[in-house]
Length: 205
Ligand code: FES
Ligand code: FES
Image 1 (cartoon, protein in one colour):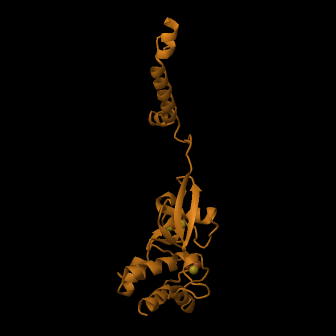
Image 2 (cartoon, helix red, strand yellow):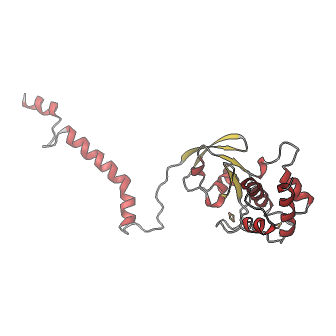
Image 3 (cartoon, rainbow, N blue to C red):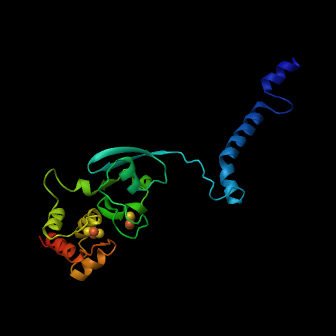
């Protein structure tokens, strides 16, 4: 009878089943927190990588819904280029300094090398590949062609996306303002005068 009572109570060596399960749960949580605590206390070196669970992100890219399973640390730029093989968006500095990676997120121009793909859940992203409508170039693409707004072309996808965003913002009224608000997009070939002409043509159309 005493044995039966012990079993019903789930008691084992002075510990009830509930206490035991509680201890197991705490141990499990401890295992999850251990690496974080170890890093915070300096026991685990900073360069020791923590395990990161991949996440699923849904993004509308150039009008097409994409579902990506990615590491939370992946930038939008790398997601576009490495996961979706959309290499129109260029990687220049990868540090937010050159603008080669500019895309539009919900109509706003951003440096995709500084933007985590995980932050784009539910957003609409437009890249250089999404500006033309079939064989019809976007007016900004056509204007860059007409005014020779490029030489090597490496900065051009970023310049065009940025210029589309700039015109939509409606803030730049003068040549100086266009130059200033496009100053985050570097052109190593120095095609600035022609880029300015292209933007002005679209802006004044
Ligand atoms: S690659 Fe993003 S700003 Fe240079
Ligand atoms: S066209 Fe070569 S960097 Fe701009």
